[in-house]
Length: 383
Image 1 (cartoon, rainbow, N blue to C red):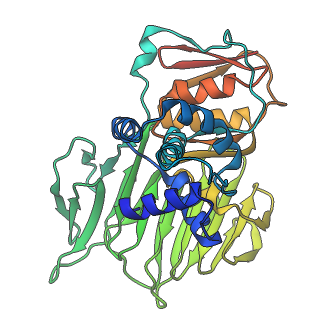
Image 2: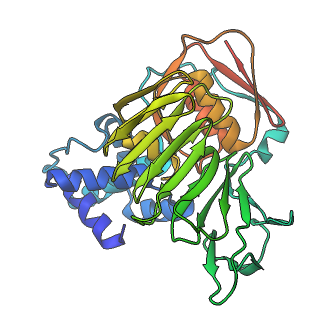
């Protein structure tokens, strides 16, 4: 969001003057925020009023931006400080709606080696048809390879894209891009389709699409913006499920270690089918297909939850600790072990994926009945 636009929204928010669409715009910015802390600190210092910031923070969390506050009695300087408070709150990206314990002794047990645990970033390996592997994190920007009638290039902002070479024969080669635990990456396929890969995921695809279909194979989670082609449907095969589209935006979560394959449609229409199940399901925007290996159920989807990872944050909605720690394990590249059973522990909230692992675990630990210990790259969940 442009700085002037953000300033307008914040100033009018604290003055209670935002319209419904403007409040929605501010909330969307809130969920996608990824500021650098140093820049925010400077902004807050210029705005002044640290005490005001602290006093307003808790209330702003509870309001979650949707209910503007009438503060006409506050001075202009304090109004600016309140806006800074909102910025600080949003930049932290931390909010959980379970009751919090005031006991300061409830702290994560952390050893010195835990300092090496950092959030994930743009990391992936590209495997060419001849078996050659390219580490995309360390590879230089520009052309990576020329193979199968295409040029493969890496952009400065962490994307890989394919360009067909005119006048050459396309021999139907396939490449695979794989993200490790702690990695994510974006790729633009030869037909212009954009794919965002989450951590611990892989996508196998032809270097050039030909024939009457465009077929790719997914393990893990990815968001697709498929380039429209009425003559050549786009197929995504993942964990015994197939999604067929012409051109649309959707997210698929299909990790091998999870019980469900979830397909969430944002735009257009898609058809979801599965092996041994002849009846395909048609999804409309806002719907989610859940395949458990036995049947496909169609439900109303939560688009913000489905897109949270792509937009830079975790979002949990009454989610069990095992599902949450699966995501933590993938993104921070840690091993998770459990001391005891935790089936009744469920959480809701959101946290920026740019935060340290201790920030996330600390706020979860502040709810009653769960503790964490970090030893090297191992996280132990305890009572």
